[in-house]
Image 1 (cartoon, rainbow, N blue to C red):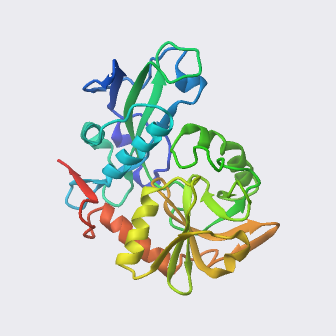
Image 2 (cartoon, one colour; image 1 turned 180 degrees about the horizontal axis):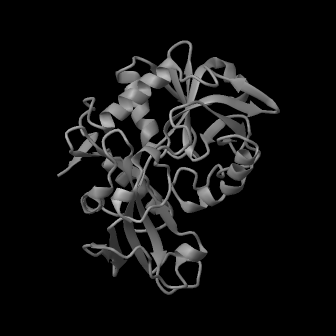
Length: 339
């Protein structure tokens, strides 16, 4: 696709084929040097463990165009570290941090013409590792592929930075001692039906409660939850089955260091939503999506407003996106420039 045909003002979150993607293969105990390719089709064995046993993981991250035309990667070392933890959980070889970040830079440079103009979106990067090779038994794969592709994106939820309503789901996203803390495809496959049902009922997505007691909020669709109390507390769930989001981690640090909020990782009881004056969902794709209301047991609990963004949520959003786009000085090491 030509970038001239893209309407930057109407970018959503959809697949757009770009020029190049990175591909590296793991054989005989090591990753090769990797290469850029124009081919967006993977050629893998029909016996690949990724196809039959879900041996795969992925990441999501973004590159941003700054006012001066330079390009920022936001905390790629954290994505590398999380992918390494996911690989450990599924018995896949780790991609070294240096190789991971170098591959990201290569993909961004090769697809620079698809990076949205300043303030119009970002270039979304999707790194992933999959088990491949001829195999049929339930065991780790004989070979693996590490790849990264990129697409220009705008807002994940329609309407962008406006409050959305969410529905508490009766389904579980992950098991208490399962793979909830790893970014693996099976977690997302399990979310398709509850997400579909929530959207069919008129909600942006569903919210999952803890799988053990169904009494505490864990995740909002594929994003993390946070709430703001009247006592200037930033509260976010802590659980072994919650994916540790990099946007969540960053907001926790900014809430404490720049907004002076007390950060609490702990239980978010579904029957005590009144403690929050604002609430939101956060993640790489969604950035911050204000939660206008949560429906539970047939009743809608409204936070700050169903139509207006809360003041603390707005400050967090402005601080985070300002750092990502180069308008605000970020903490040391958060921004990696792509030359």
